[in-house]
Amino acid sequence: MCTSTKEMTVASWQKIGAIDLMNKSVPVVKAGELLIKVAASGICGTDLHISRGETPHAAKKVVIGHEFCGYVEEIHPDTQALAKVGDLVSIDPNMPCNQCTFCRNQKYHLCPHLFCIGVTVDGGMSQYVCVPARAAVPVPKHVTPEVASLAEPLSCVVHAVDQGNIKTGDSVLVIGAGPIGLMAIALASTSGGRVTVIEPSAMRRQKAIEIFGASEAFAPGTLDPVDGTLGEGYDVVFECVGRPNTCLDAVNFAKAGATVVWVGVAKVEDRVAISPFEVYRKELTITSTYTNPYGIDRAVKILAESKIDWSQLVSHSFSLSEFEKGWEVFLAGTGLKVVIKP
Image (tube, rainbow, N blue to C red):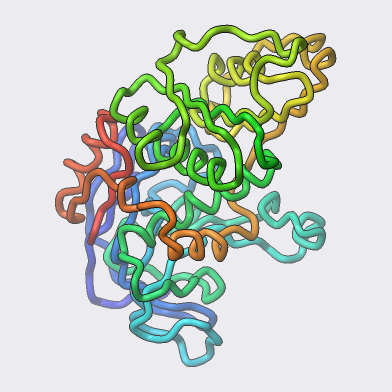
C-alpha cells in the first residue's frame, strides 16, 4: 500500500489479548479507491475475537474497524464512484474475488478469497482509510454518522432475517438482545412477527420492548419449556449470542416445522450436542448466517426510513484518543453499541 508522509492515529491488533493505539502513515489513494475520513466506527464482537486470536483469517497487526462510515476525502482520478467528495458513506467491508464458483453463483460472501476491511486489511478504527469504490454506499443527509455506522451490522441482520423467512403472524424468538439481537427484534417485528426475547440484562429487555418492537422479554431460565411436537414453541428462532448452550436452547424452543437461525459467532472449538432424532421428529430447518451478502444498500435504506429510533443502539461514544475507555466499556458489556469518532 502506498503511504503519505502524514501520520494518523489508529487502533491496531498488535499482540494477543489487546488492541493498541499507534501512529501510521495516512494511506495514499490508488486507482479504484476512495480515501475516507472516518466519522464513526463501531466496536464489534468480532474485534474482540480478533484481539484474542480467535479469528483464523484475521491479518496480523491489522487496523480493526469493519463497522464504519465516513466522508469521502479524495477520489482517485481513475476511479468511477457513485459518491462525491464530501459525501457521507457507509462502508461494506467484504470484498470478493469475483472469479470463484461462489462469486459466479451469487454467493460472494462465501468466497474463499474474500478480503474484509478491518479484518484482513486495515479498517476504519482510524482517522483515514482507503476503500474500493464499490464498498462505499452514499447515505442520505438526514442520517447521522453514528447511525450510518450501524449499516454493516444491520446488513448482517438483514441476511439473517431473510434466512428466517418470517411470515405475518409468526411467533418469533430472539435469544440475546445485544446490538445484533435488538436489530433482529426490530426487523422481525416490522416483518409481521410477534417477538419474544430471552436476555439476562434488564436494561436490554426494556429496550427490546419499548424501542425495538418485542412483545415480551424474559430472563434466561424463566421461559417455560415447550413441546414443539404439540404445536408449542416458536416458528422462527434467532440465536444472537454465539454460545453452545444458547444454540441448543434455540433448537429446544423451536416448534415442529420451525426455522432456527444461528446468528451469533461462536468460538472455533465450540460444539453443540443436539439430538438428531429431535431435529428429525420436529422437521427443523437449522441454518446460519455468514456476513452480509447484498444487504448494505437495504440496510442504509432501513436506517434512513427511521421507523425505528436506531440512535438508541448507540449507548457510548468516544474519541479515538479515548479508545481504551471505549474498549473497557465494550468489554464490560454494560451498554449497547460503543462508537468511536476519530
